[in-house]
Length: 377
Image 1: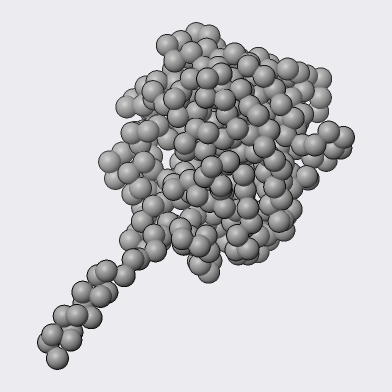
Image 2: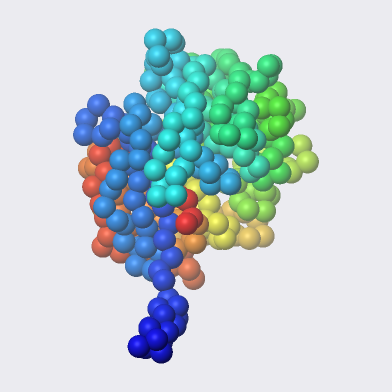
């Protein structure tokens, strides 16, 4: 019997175990959602496990997992938080099962915080306030608590863009840190600019850079922003004009220049009622993906590794309505799209040779899904 048990034990050890990745979903509450949800992605098949509520929170529309994977940070996209003007920002400890335990909450300093990110070391948290048209920064303590810096933790954008209703005032829509960790880049839809800031991550402070911004064409509305792994190029989707801009990036100065602008939808597509939402560079740096709301697709582009310019590959349906956000899992094998209006999340497989997308047939119901984030187990 002992020999038989030993053989069984050895057999179990040799059976490959499918790799799993935690997936967190930010949502809009008020309908069927209660907050932040979680699932498990099977990296072999692309299947998602049944949905579990990870934490109750009002309008956690955007999330970020800390680089050390111990904490999750979330905005509350509201005009008021705990009775005060401005939205909310919460930090959570991540349990072994992926559950979330609240650590701290702070005011975002501006209305409707809609995007959140950290530096690569996990020392500083940055928040873009859409309605406030401002940026807030916080130090991240060793225990995950958020601490407002003594100075330099808030910048209000000024001015306006084109003479359009959505551009009568600033609307900061995303904030991302460059690969060096020295600067933060803010896409402001209201100003048609990507603003550039110096970042002191340890102090949690941001100050204007020189040059201070890149001006994009009028009425284009830059929304999200993604760096190429090399840091030489960056890409921003233009929400209002249904386009994506390829940008050169001067690593020394932070300066950006437009290389080209490409449409993300087929010729003849109606612009009214449609818009782009998310823009991500694949971890390999080979491809760029942009989501189209209304057209309900992902536009796929190849990146020329010598010039940073784009070559269109395809449009692939997200099999739902209003793909507000999507994420690429850490292995680079799958793209998971959150369809806000149809309350479903779908899994598309990324062809590792061409970058094209293929439906896996796997999806789960997630109420008002608006953000997808990963944690490798």
